[in-house]
Image (cartoon, rainbow, N blue to C red; front, side, top):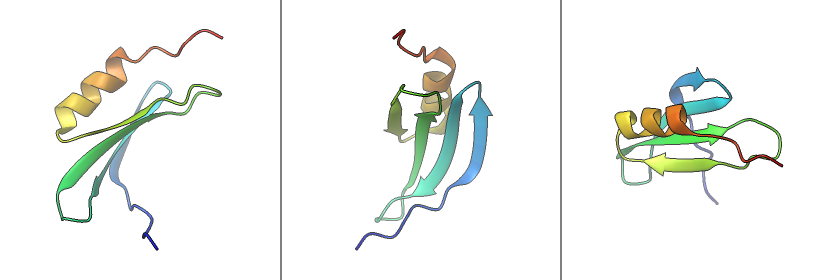
Length: 63
């Protein structure tokens, strides 16, 4: 059974949240997730700068 991720250093850029956590091997990963309804965007990155860039340039699809 997997342990839930514990995010630290969580920031918000519009509807997109960025959080840092450690993976099973002890490496720091940065997760980006959009909190807008019906968007579903999320991604993991190795660097914080890449995650922040993805958060700034994310556009929710028009539905």
